Image (cartoon, rainbow, N blue to C red):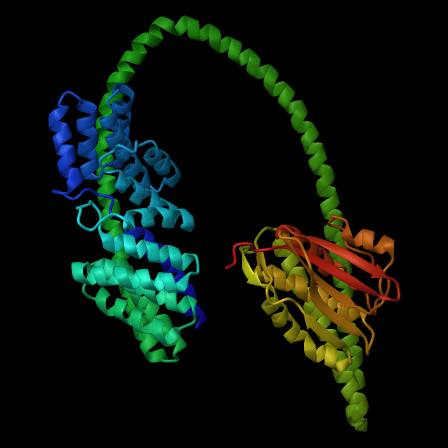
Length: 580
């Protein structure tokens, strides 16, 4: 059930980081009461009073301004700690996590609510995927005695510890803490948090491919989302159920969930529009006030400008003179750049012309070969020479496949040159990718009686774009088959390598190549290789495409070959180190 597993993983961060962070100060909380006491005690500290007021209102920009003013003007460590806390929360709400972390680290250990600082640092570490650091912070908070009142929910701490273990693939501990957190959420009747718990428990089981245990929790999350007003949770829970039913092959029910998902999605968009309009109205009011201020400032500036106009005129003349000299030198420099670009453009045009010439020649040859073969097919059919007919049909198939591969490579090459390809590097299981490509070529190798062996290690994971990696392996394997005679051998395997790169080797017993040919193939150039034999050598476009895509994936290409013995094409790719 791959679809559900991927979506469940994608919502993991959404639920864990947004749902279980309590940023705003509840009225009557311990910190709220402490802040009120500080306001009474330090009435003369206007900046602190404004900072705490905007902090309670959730006006993060104003909080940052006045808290910074207070920090600059006071030597009171107690007030400084509160201001750094206000700034840390404000940056966190504005998604500036590194700045938030710096502010929290400025707070002294004597701060009355230092445990809240650890809680926020844990949430930031969780949001930045620093799971071991986050786990340390939350475990410190977990050790606090239950007999003392604190400004946080213990259920959230337990849940976040479970999330850290889930990301670290320690599933037994993750299960223990996620269930502890869920039970406390049930006791607290915190419906939103409980929905998040159910979703993350489902994710836990999907990570372990325990579908039967995961699906009931998706269903619980869905039914519970009916009771809340949050369109985001309704949308997420409904989409999960749609994917669950699709994988169960219950398509009518899946369609019903999809329609419900679109309803919640539209509702969420409408809500966002209302908030956006309110924000625009607020900004408009601020701009109107700012215009009035700007008019007064402009009047003052005009008076100053009249007194200093003579000085400014002199400075302006000097600037114009300097600018003229600069632009003259810049023109000379630009002319040199344009000349170099023209030379490069000429080379690119030459490459393009050569490409069109070779591709058109190959396509014309393929079409002409098909025409000739079809004529022979008609003759064989009329004479009922079925043996010859079978040979010619296989020949036609080979010609068509060659033309298709040429056009496919041409399309991918053009997309790569115009930077229109979708490129996303991720963790890929190398053995699985090779098996996908191998499947398409097995019939061709069996038909030519070519022995094939796949010894790719099942433990290797590479960091690459999946589509481009398939194109690379497909072209290399296609070349190996093309240059290997009937009854030959082809093998694909991985070599022992260092910690940074994985070496994928495609070895054949084909024609091989000279040292000069190897050197030419490995050049980082856009020019295509020359044709030597129309029966075996193609445009060279496939190899150029492979090199470009390997370089784009952060790898390199190596060749080991001997004429009339065989060739080893080595694809060197980055390893994915963090795969658990």
